[in-house]
Amino acid sequence: MAPEEKDTSAETTYFGFRDVDRKEKATLVRSVFDSVASRYDLMNDLLSGGVHRLWKAALIDCLKPRHNMRLLDVAGGTGDIAARFLAAGGRDVTVCDINSSMVMAGRDRAINSGITGISWTVGDAESLPLANATVDAYTIAFGLRNVTDIDNVLAEAQRVLRPGGQFLCLEFSKVVLPLISDLYDRYSFSVLPQLGARVAGDGQAYQYLAESIRKFPDQHALSQRIAAAGLDHITVQNPSGGIAAIHAAWCI
Image (tube, rainbow, N blue to C red; front, side, top):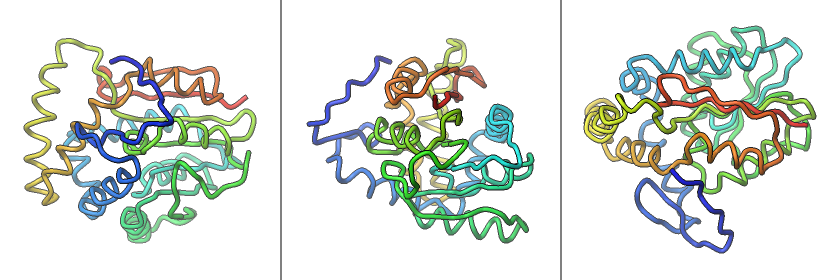
């Protein structure tokens, strides 16, 4: 997949395979997650066979939480990454998500699980409600694909990170093993929507998921955009053959 050229004059962007007005995408994405919020975690387990848990564990391994680390988890409405951060020794974590339904679902889940120590806020990844250089680490798991402007989100990540702070992005990416590429395509466009319809009651939401993955920049293209945002020392891991990728970088 070729790197996307940023055109600030463009009036449209992608929503799955559709071109939509840039001003409409956030509302369209919000409607997707409003629809599936209550069953989002269950669907993650079903659709990945539980493998998403291994990917998130790898993300936390890269992060190496410390008790004095302040983490901002963006698009983390269910609180999954935040809970893992706390379990690994972290103490200070804020979850920021633009979708209030996801935040409420995550907060309820944390309360029901007896998890405390998470601050919850509804906010836009493209205009974070934080001052400059105020967090030690920034994570975004399966959220960057859904924003209107990836470059604005990356610039905001760089802005709120302290010098020496770590950026971590876990996202679906380009499969790097040819043997599983065709199987993955067939699974994405047939099984995903069917399961979404049966379990979450919204097959179109998971059709969007499959399409949005194909429109997202591949590992190399995303690395270039992370570098352009002013982050450095970029590394990429490809768990599960590149079905997902973990991009790590540092604020210098």
